[in-house]
Image (cartoon, rainbow, N blue to C red; front, side, top):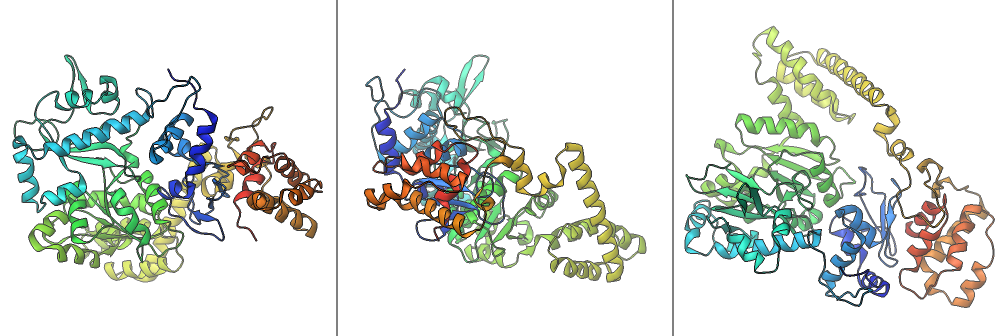
Length: 579
């Protein structure tokens, strides 16, 4: 087994990598002043961006939850990779050959590592795509053609074909150097009583990519009558594929989502619906992969949208049948976590976007977005649909069914308006509707507090970031001799006194960390030789004073050496916008 990556290579790869580019693939970043970017934190839920990135110093920090680090720690935390795998992944991006302490050079990743699983999936995707042109794949090409997709469309989305044989992908990928264990780990093969065999056989195959464009799994559609498996078969849960965190098409949609005005995401139900929307000009369409839309999907989308304002839109398209209506109600339970406005668009005549495009053209798909209905209104209509509104009993029952929906609206301007909407729908006095909504809200609040008490969290920990942070211990690498420090004991920038002398020292420490390498060494040494009066700031100064400012990455390293409980203060000084 190869040894550790030599430190010089670790530093070289980091110096050649723009952390803003890496973070920007997962988080929508905006300018936050000279040399600073900000966005919604990927490590905790928040409505206003408190996550700052400073590309010049290669460091990030969240002022909300306290997470901070360099580009390697970001990949480790986001993608659950080891430090070596993070270095190897970034080295692969820039084509840098790593060296190891034993003197060997190797390709990124060991057997069964995440890097090898990514590579296996990429190789499989290319092989499946090539098979789509084979004579056997005529049924697959016919399926696509009948839905309005030509060879060009298939190429854009990487659609492929898995032959009927039991070991086609096994033989092809083993010839490229992958082991059976790696193919099993990637979910490309299944284990049976007689050994391993191709998981996808005789099916049309769509590669499922993460937000960075790496293939993490596949979705396969049944083509033949003698195939007794499910209509759609997906990659099982693997080290790199978690269906609750992946949205099909997001790699293609993310740029237009982040640049839109307003920023709009269209959530559809299937792979062909995503294709139809994109080809019709709705280039922000995405779909879940074999699972219901949930909280993890919301977290992914919010980071891409950067929805720190209410200007964004999330439009759900559902089939108008009963299953689609149930899906809409499930989505409503989660969609309230969006800061953006949520809508539902239902196509006429029972069409999904793919059928709509096929039967009525691209313009009809685009027009579908203009017929969207606010999700609250849609859910209200669903709740009252089963009641006889011509009878008193029916109207009262419908009010009791719909009032909890209106009670969930926290916007103090919108809730009264929807109370009036419900009153008009039911033909009931707005006063009676308001009374029932208030009662439903009270019951919901009481239930929420009971749940908090049962969990022992208290309201503060459930509703705000601070309570959750107080219970979490320090997770960052600790200097020698450090002990775990509760978040509540760590010194933060906002904890410092606002007196003129402390403000001067705060801005000086900020200047030293962010721009010290641009100052004449003799002048900087003189400034750093003067102790600060504030103890926390002086702890930061001490580490800057002994740092090698000529070495790339010196500032994050200095932050990591600051003793507790002052390390988070140092991280905030490095990333806060310079006054």
